[in-house]
Length: 193
Image (tube, rainbow, N blue to C red; front, side, top):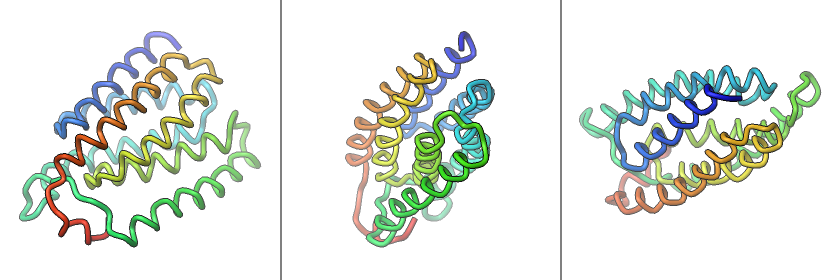
């Protein structure tokens, strides 16, 4: 894809690195990344990813605000865990959502990889929402997304993006352990996401 893909990859790496560090600048870096990927995914007919990145534009603003003011008393947000019910509901939502979305993409569009693309889209929406809420488990969803995305982007000739997602896979694994170390208590874990 050339220079646009290279810039998107650079900002994607920066976004995840800043997220691991719980740095608020992850959100503006992410905004640049997702904006560029809207164009890229249109060009390679990964429509679910395109729609996902349009939604990401809005989630970037929400996450930015929520990390700054979503904590107790309007303070900065801290890392928390999902409650037991939410820990069951979110994975079930991913499975149901990707099957329905994949079917719709397969039967109503010329999408290149409708089910794989649907999985990364639905799981990414869940992961991004949980990331905006600073839930530790968001990293586990990102790990699943990254594994599938590596193959999808490689098969579409997006080699830099595939490499980025391989890097994301490593970073998500590190992010999980870093955030686990900053998770400070058990009481917030009882709240649903």
